[in-house]
Amino acid sequence: MMTTGTSSRAAKDEGSIADIFTSLTNEEHNVLPDRFSALKKELWSDGMVESWREVLAALETTVEEIAAKGSESVPRVRYEDLKAGLSQAQIDSIKRAGAVIVQGGVQREEALAWKQAIREYANANADRVKGFPADNIQVYEIYNSKSQTQARTHPAVVETQKFLLSLWHSSDPNTEVSLQTPISYFDRLRIRQPGDAKFTLGPHVDGGSVERWEDKGLQKVFGNILKGGSNWKKHDPFDVTPRIGAKQDMYNTSNACSIFRAWQGWTVMSSTGPNEGTLRVLPMLSLASAYILLRPFFRPIDPRSDSLKFEDWVMDLESPTFPGSSIGKTQELNERTHPHLKLGQTMVSVPRVEPGDQVYWHCDTVHAVEARHAGPGDSSVLYIPAVPLTVHNASYLRDQRINFLAGLPPPDFPGGEGESKFIGRGTPQDIQNHEGRAMYGLEAFSPSPEKGLQAGFVDKVNQILLQ
Image (cartoon, rainbow, N blue to C red; front, side, top):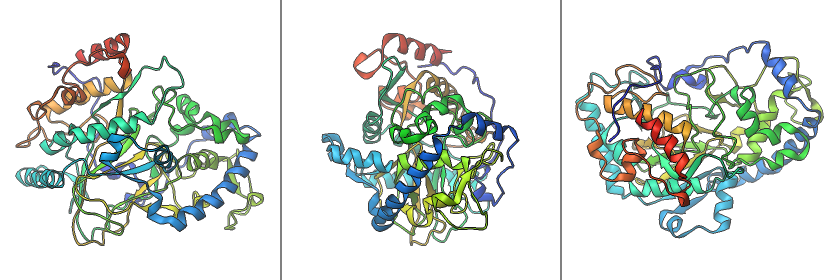
């Protein structure tokens, strides 16, 4: 087993999930410094005008299609079919939407048992449990329960993540990544009670805010969009090569993911459908990304006008405004900041899910949480994403392991004593197989070229884990 070691990251301040979302605090977005006007000028190309024209035209059709289909815009597949091999049409629909529901895999009774064990864990440590909102917790600052460890290393969850990572590819064969080797990235859990209207996450994209334009690595990720003309159509949201060098947390913000997380995800612990406090997504991955990246460069001629016509918008390089963007927050969107997306029609609730189902959405997918839980029962999920092994991710995994062994929150999340004094938290003994222990950074990886684990790459990873 790997040694405990000392974390290379300073702990974040104590806090909650609200720290990174203005939609939870009703704050106004920060006024950005003047250097962001200079950034616009640096990134601008005259071809962006044609890009803007084409993207707005494409949105008109796509918005109508999504509005008509509603929740059916979100693909659903059975776990058994995923293991047997999905059709190209199914894969294309997942990539186009940027989201998928995987039905089955984890047994219903097992998922419900995880939830019950979490309730007992929270009750046993009631005087130390934190979350949001503080007076009636719906989202728990719990990361190290036995249930979470069991779920993160569950064979069906791991196999699903391997499939999802296989939808990515490397444009450079020398990219140091194994898309066949998921690792664990700790996140919170949610047990949202009927009637709750406080845990209302508005539409947003994780993985940075102003970083999308400011970071040189993310400029490469979205390079085809920023080139102008029809190049936005060449944007490949599943190319891993530029991602692993990108820095999406330039400001070391609490609650901001600092690693490459290919898919964010839920593992479901309740029967939850539309209007029951569930997830909402904007199921048009590439087109939405193109619009979001181009939006800061244009403004309406008349700020009082609601016109969405191309001819009623003009270039904006003088203001430092990046709509919905703040330093130290996530990238947020609404119908005022990003009107052409018509979010009131296109943000669709995912169809009903049952205990043991999994829901995943691409790291660039716009998503939200329904404003009110109007259902009869709890809406409960474990946040478990699909994350591949890279050198940078291994560095985070090492520090996450150190915190896990000490019962502390994972490095990207609010700090403090966490669960270090909790009774009954998870331990390495709760993981019964080598793959799960490697996912937790508890055991070394072995070379396996067919899995993208070249000897040199594995040596780098293991040296980091052993530090």
